[in-house]
Length: 106
Image 1 (cartoon, helix red, strand yellow):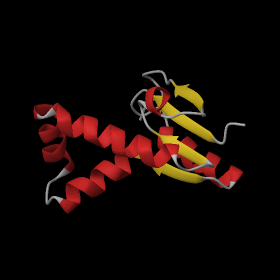
Image 2 (cartoon, helix red, strand yellow):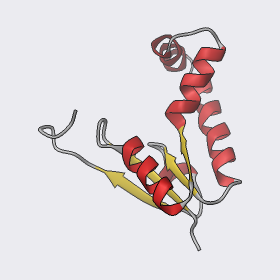
Image 3 (cartoon, rainbow, N blue to C red):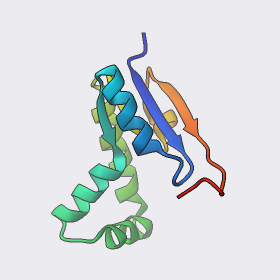
């Protein structure tokens, strides 16, 4: 039985909002790659923009983050995961893609 749900989708489609609501309703843990990246940037004394620039310049950092996050998610159960590439890296999960019209995106 699958006990994880990954949420991917367009910018401003509500991945975090939907994820938090689902986690609350199901009694699951909500986990977000964005939160991990912001924390890592802070630990390195960088703004999120500076950190993302560093990742763009060095693709190995991006790969390392994906592998680390996927490893953590794959060893746990009962998760709602906000992760654009969740469908690619997270095993034994329902994968949901959220789409929103330009008019409704905020």
